[in-house]
Length: 436
Image 1 (cartoon, rainbow, N blue to C red):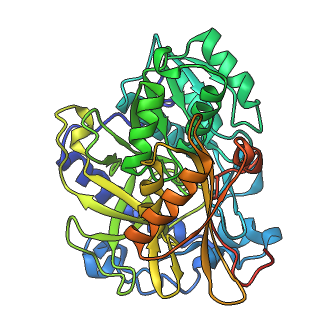
Image 2 (cartoon, rainbow, N blue to C red):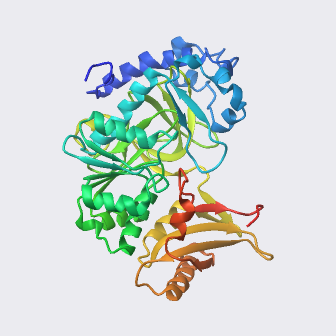
Image 3 (cartoon, rainbow, N blue to C red):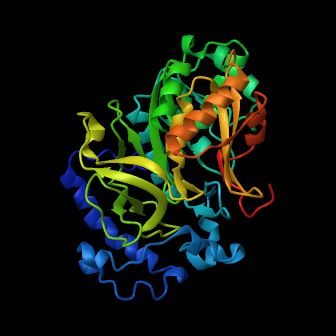
């Protein structure tokens, strides 16, 4: 491939990364100044001093809510810095709440963006000789098509199925059985859905051909990882990206965190309240600035909505060890508060995935005539006693989270049908103040 198609080889040192950042950060600011949206916001910023942390922090952090306030009809004119005739593709923002946004991408943006997606598969050791079954959603949300394109560009074969709404789950399992892919690339929740459907059909995926699972777009708790690796008999690589940038981080073979491409993005982890940097290893909000793929949408200090911990060095001695790591915790809206008790969604998700009798679940905070309550709908695994599973779950949730839930046992496959067509499976729903 030519240099134009593969514009960013992996840096060989931290000094090389620093040199890239020193060159590209002023360019990112100057490009943002071309946007009508940033008019008046960057007047006091001295690009000659942009590498001074205090000067850099004068730039206000940008949130999705601010962009959602722009009229959709004039978003391009209000925010973007190249004409509509330069657009080669649109990317839809993900998420399960709020109005989605549609970002135009130029040809240059796509070249740099695809470099990030190729790195995801390289970091997991995928390439020629592999067959990648892509079950991320397909459509205007970029992730599914980008994983498929990247695999082909690296010399791997591809089965591009999309999620269950694109290709029915039963047909996907038949394709996995007959075509024998070595890699599954999809959201963790759908990979679990495939495995649970396979169990109902008597298919043992762990005895099959898949050896690696590439997941992104939602946090993977230790319990979810354990269940996925057991059901598939495969090694899971957790990966990360944002529509406002591209694919930007992956685990190495050591699985001790996700190495983040700091030659492509300037990365900050800040306190949610003060917006000041947090020390290494402490939880904070991830804020990123694209250094290259900003010829159309000039994001500066973009608040991703993800809580992470920054780790300067990982354990790998491979080529991705040059990058620092993030350890993903949860999305911003990652808590239920019910009867005065804060319940971390990641904690209860991990708890439920560790219960063998539960095949699938959904959690809702609902209003009753007396008190708010936590409703947990579960599908039980084959061979489990439904009544016993429900009673045991209610008891163990009360003991662990100090709140007695309402447990409802539902028919197997109910949640698979409910989640069909969703970009992301929303297993946590706050129904208080809305019709049940």
